[in-house]
Each structure stands twice: as C-alpha cells, then as structure tokens.
Length: 209
Image 1: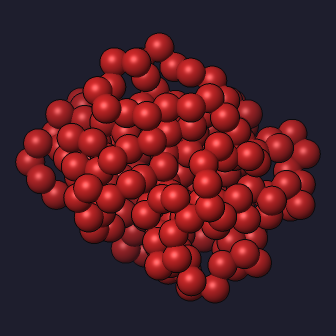
Image 2: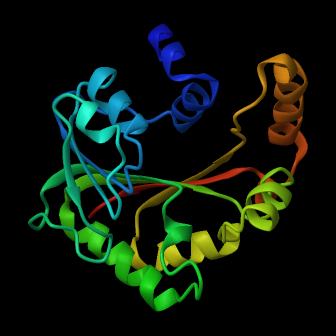
C-alpha cells in the first residue's frame, strides 16, 4: 500500500490494503452509494481512475471532489448504458437495499443492475459488513439499527447472479488512536483463529463473464 494512503486515515488504509485489488489507471469506475466521496477521492488521487458515483442523497462534499462525476440515482436504475464501466464498487451498500424488508427479490434485482453496467471481463467489487461480527453486531446492528447481511446470505445471494466470484473475509474497523495497539492485536487474533463467519467484512470480487 502506498505511503500516502496515510492521509485517508487508518480505517480506509486498512480496507484498501486488505482488499488487495489492482485497479488499473485510467479505467472507468462507478462508486455505487458513494456517500461523502471518500472512496472516490482514493480512486481519483491514488489509483488515477476515471471516477463516477451515484447515491440517492447528494453529500455536501461531492462538489469539492475535482473530476468526480456524480449523479443522483439509486441502484435499481443506474443511469448509464450497458457495459459502460470497467469497475463497479460498493462499500457497505447492499444491506441498505430494502433495509426494512430485506427482500431477496430486490437484492437480486440490484445485483443484476450492477451486472448490466459493468463491461464483459470487468470487475464488481463488493465490501459489506458482516452481521454477526462481535464488534459490528452490538454496535452497528443492535445500537444503530443497520440490517447487515449474514455471511451465508451474502455468499448465496451473490452466487445466484454471478459465476466467477472470489470471496474474501477480513477484519477492519475505525479504532481510537490511543487503543490502536490493543485493537490491532484483537484484529490479528480474529483473522488468525476465528471462523470466517465472524470476521467483520465480507468481500466479493466478481469477474463479469
């Protein structure tokens, strides 16, 4: 990981380091659910990608990101033509789709729309929090009400739409600096001895065939 990733903070640096995916410069990427544009900044400044983004809400920071092409839109109807992108990227987006009802019909509909806009031999990269991670469940699920997917559901649902999927699982959290050593030790032990079903992030790297 490049040293200048430090400017994005410990959490973002850990996510992209553990993702370990080689984005090729000058390729076109769509950030689905781009939020405040923090991932878009990384795509533009570090990977030198031609970055586009959609979200149902426009964050105040979006207009500050030079050369970022944003459209207000949702995942069910992405406003780009078929096979337009080399990469499609989602970070903690899937569990917000139909969050109240969690309909597999709507989840599959969304995944098929991602498939429509990515090129043949292009990649879809999905990073999604794991419901039953020991840190996520009490904080994100119970306290904050995020309806994260179970790992088994994540795998099953993605496999219904795509054939060539590389699944990865790892720990990544935003830790208080003063307790960083303690939490990094916890993270190391979790990845070393914990069942994969409890690790914080479920990742799917999908080659669209």
